[in-house]
Amino acid sequence: MSENTRSLGTESRIHFMDELRGFAVVLMVAYHGFYTVGYLFDRFWGRFLFGFFTPAEPFFAGLFIFICGISSRLSRSNIKRGLLLLGVAVTVSAVLWVFRPEDLILFGILHFLSVSILLFGLVRRGLDRIPPLTGLIICGLLLLITWWVPDYKGSLLGIKGLAAWSIPKAWKQPWLFWLGLGEVQTADYFPVLPWIFCFLGGSFAGVWAAKGRFPRWMYRKRVPFLSSVGRHSLLIYILHQPAIYAVCYLILIIGRAIAG
Image 1 (tube, rainbow, N blue to C red):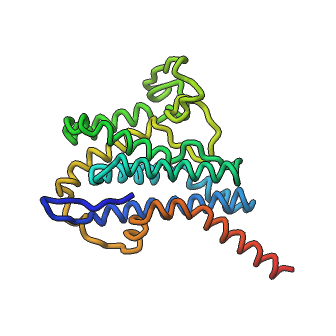
Image 2 (tube, rainbow, N blue to C red):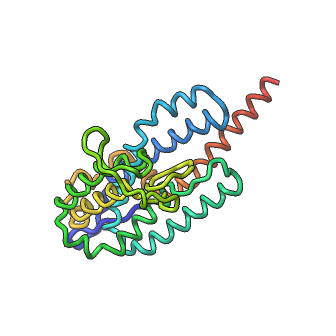
Image 3 (cartoon, helix red, strand yellow):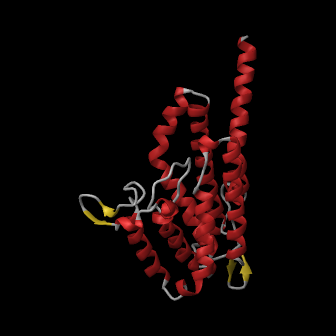
């Protein structure tokens, strides 16, 4: 999910974006690893670490989404990119439905990103009319207003006890769970509200990236490992959970063999 940037007619990769994306992916893999160890292999330390890092999960997920929004400004074809990612997301859901129905993902981060990329591809011309800084400020405010929509089960906008507005009950429908306005049982959940504003905020920052206006230090590679992880983030996301499960299972088998 990474792209080459174009700056004043020359191509220059923003390695800092790759490294940030790689950092977010490493945190995601560790987080899912704790879940696997704790809940699939019933280890207390896994459950403890999973619960300990749960409050931080929206921040590294948000970082990943924001960078994807930046990349949308650098892509040659967001429609093609979004459709490809949607196919991957649907495939992941289908595999889980067959082999791990208890961990079924109905609208996870891949589903969200594919929908966001497609939406951006459709409305890009309209967004181009909004100055980047204005767009960033608007997206920040809308992100704050809609942040708690999923926690409120689609019943409120804003912050309860401070400034909140009721959402009409007619809008709270089960089939609108992908918007954040309904309830759903899913192992991974990134509804359009509030996350679309994080993505769009990144797309406005991406205007500066496309014009080569990011600070020059962002174009220098500093952590090759994270940069490599960031460039292969989609493949890692697809493969990391089966790989974690396989490693844990292998360790379990070896441990039993040694003990027995």
